[in-house]
Image (cartoon, rainbow, N blue to C red; front, side, top):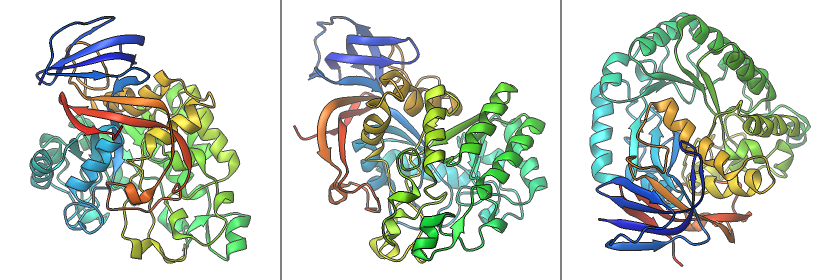
Length: 427
């Protein structure tokens, strides 16, 4: 279908476009971007008052499929992504069975094309079954298009084995996505180790649980030369170490999730399982460091760590509830409301963190841009739509969010994937 997007404010990190332009989409590609286009089209979308941006690329999503479909499926996760303006998902491998060989990667990709309205890139596990004993078929998964390996949900505690995995990933031109958590130091912790944990009578998780592994992984990346991406960073020292790694010229990037750059453990007023995530909500000092890291460019990416659970799994004490928060449908509005409006990021910066930088990390040269010849993955975002987040309207099966009821600005009005409208807001 030929689609003409009129009167929108185009934000394009690749070309630096930041102004009112029309965009013509045909045959899955962006054909023209100009100040005024009058081409005949089967559909004209009036984007007046809206930003026209490259579709968001979420490097960190748990789709739970295969094996845990009661939490999420390729279809429901994809619908949630489309509503949130996310056009490409990186799916974590901690499913049942764990995605640890090329055949499993290929099967998810095949099913996603049939069942999911957005693009899915399956990430492969570092070790077989994520058991930390034997390496997965990293070469086979790379051939199947996994783009990265990750043990997400845990760290590979055997540093020698992890170093071997990094070398193989490097040889095959893919990245390593690191969940930084020294499991030997968790000691039953369920939230940040501070006065709030003491107030609620809960065991705490110190910053060093993350920082020790972040330091180790950066050192291993230096030795092996692999591209290393640190997932869901939550501490001030993670920011500091990533900055030092970049100064040294290492291929190290980092992501921050909205819950970590907005909330602190002070926001946990009562024992509510919806506030339980891993890593946990940290201190005000950590949040300020994460925001400054995003502002300065030390932190490259905003991802969600979308981790849906059933109501039964979250409607418990923090001590017993499952770790995890959903985020696909709220990340754009939260980023706009808490980073762009206060001045930490420009709209160009938001597009960089949510689309352009992720595309570079994945090596997706045809995405992350609203420019001629690129794949037409596009989001049309209205900055002035104000509303309260309502978990009951989520397309995701997961409703586990502490942001329910938060008033936000910014709504995704249209999402295009490969030049086709896959989501349209009710107007």
